[in-house]
Length: 200
Image (cartoon, rainbow, N blue to C red; front, side, top):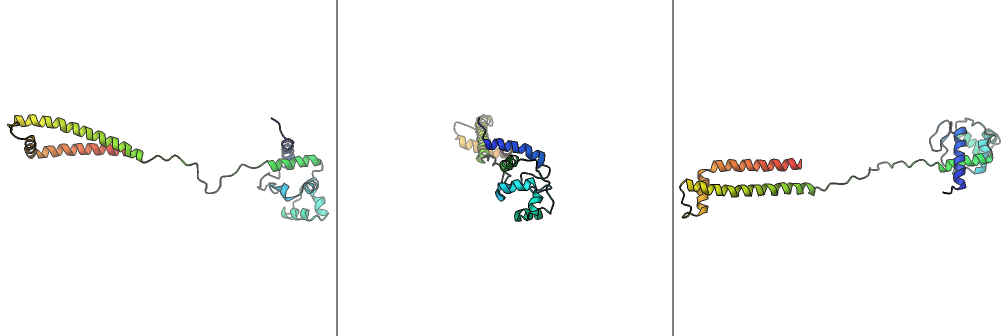
């Protein structure tokens, strides 16, 4: 993969920056000893920055308005001269500062990635299964119980051939109402317990 000349300059500038500038400056807006350098290439011209970096005090003493303002804003702390750096070295530093963009911060109030919402009808599906299953059990129980009931009626002396089965059942219920009520309560509580345990 081809690497552009600008990227090579930025990589060279990174090394020079760490060796000469990193103690006092960051490439962000964060201030250390000196100000943060983010966006410095858009605030000042390249020619002016070269002069400032090589000898800031010479530029201040010359009466340069930008230099005087920068010196005063920095609490009149003099930046050491870097006469050893060539114009190209400084250009490489500026290229590095321009490309060393900090990672984007999460916007205030931003919410994390939305979590998948579990549809509540899933709970109702489970409840329906429990309910239908319970109804099947109850129907089977009642069917078996009716067969058992008919046999019991025969034993008790009811004439099943001459008396309608409906009347036979009603007569048995009247005589065994408490027992039947007890069985229905037990079945109802069992079904409710199963439904609640599935929902919770």
